[in-house]
Length: 246
Ligand SMILES: Cc1cc2nc3c(=O)[nH]c(=O)nc-3n(C[C@H](O)[C@H](O)[C@H](O)COP(=O)(O)O)c2cc1C
Image 1 (spheres, rainbow, N blue to C red):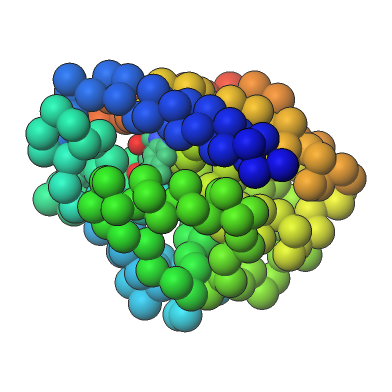
Image 2: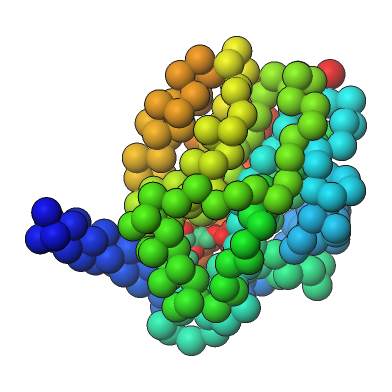
């Protein structure tokens, strides 16, 4: 049993390391290059719930929209060498995590409400410490307690769901999130900024955790090395979904 666990964990670790080292050459803060290219609301994107544009204490504020953009993102504070991966974008002088940046663009494009998935525990913001922490959390099959809540879920019928690929899986807070809420009858549209593995199996996992939701199978997957230059790709993708905001 121990042996199986050890094999499993070492396979996981190799997966994670392989994924995290892919494309490391471009490591460092991703600068948004286009002048207009940064979401106007980028400054809204804080790193904690108090600064969150979703409203006080991290709960999504009803902006009258039927679209919610929920995301999890951990902006790393290092990653300026070739070992650590770039997990942050600077847009209009504002630093944010990769998935946070994509969420901002979706918000700008759809007029939806932003909701940042946050946990009571704080994640390390340096790459190696974050890798270790997330690896342990996955090995334990943890369900980190969430610090932010959606209070008006009924008003949304479309949920964009953004997250980084962690260890070829959803980050564990996404398990808590997807087990805590019932998205029956709603449409979930996944997006991810990743280190080379794309979605891995995460879309199937979302479908399994939310069997009564419609989960869009071809979500948006962007390599972290391209995130800073991905605004037009995100905009085109959103427009191609032909959503109608209410
Ligand atoms: C703990 C951890 C595990 C990761 N595992 C993978 C992985 O298995 N596959 C992959 O493609 N990228 C992996 N990455 C890279 C992230 O998916 C990538 O840096 C992502 O853009 C981070 O998004 P964020 O800035 O929104 O948090 C991992 C990153 C971390 C911190």
